[in-house]
Amino acid sequence: MYREQRATTCAVVMILVLAAFAAAQSTRKEVHFKVGRRTSVSIVNQYGPISVKAGPGKRVMVTAILYSGKVEVDQSKRGNRVSIVSHLLEGADADSGRVDYEVLVPADASVTLHSTTGPLHVEKLHGDVILESSTAMVDVRDVSAGRVHIKTLNGPVTLTNVNDGYVEVTSVSGDVALNAVNGTSVHVNSSSGKIHYDGDFGQGGQYSLTSHSGDIEAIAPSFASIEVVARSVQGKVENDFPLEPEHTSFVPRAGSAFAGTVGKAASSVRLLSFSGKIHLKKREQ
Image (tube, rainbow, N blue to C red; front, side, top):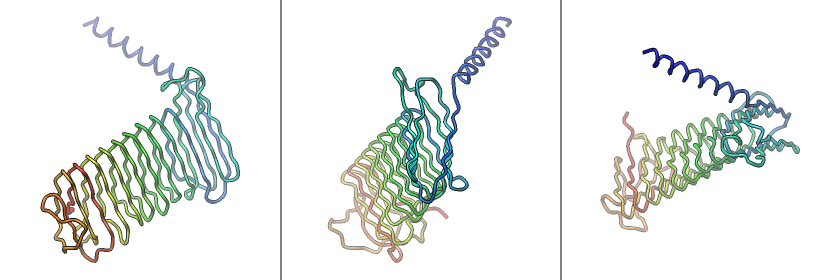
């Protein structure tokens, strides 16, 4: 009993020592820029998360946590263009080269973020958003009236409450989830990742969800107003809505393709896959 208590005590002490050592090694850096309307902010970070939110006034406020002396933060401002780059020094790796960014920008700012492994998060903006990542999670929420471009290899992508904009998501194998997303144009393309849409397809927009081998699930309310085409060459296709038939360039087949309209067909919806399953699902009230 005594040996077990002693071992537990030693383990706790070791964890505290390692945490204290990590804290001692980290450095906090803050940078502020005064900007005007429609500022452009670019952040490139090889390792570590980037979180960008709307802040007060016409300022860009950057807080960076550096985890070693093998990485530096380079910053520049030219006009209304702000650039932040994590500059890796010789010998830096995923641990020693990590930088955590928390950034506040004007709500109308356009933001471009690049990261390899760190999660990307953008919230409450109405400027353009461009996000590129390899394996990290991408999360965009509460943005409107801008263009949202996302490109990733296998990191999961989640968009929540994105309104009145142009949305384009391209992923190789990452899953893509869209919750309450609508706009003039919403296009999602994934080679093997799953695509999940839960919204109302807006009014007067064009929606295209395409995956080569991943499943596609689109959930909409009974009052949705859409013209829809769904087709999977080798996968199963299901539909919960009563459709008014519509002429298409292919022959609709039960279980593999369908086309028609719901309501006044205000928005165009295309659900396409080669071998994935497609389900247009009516939301339970």
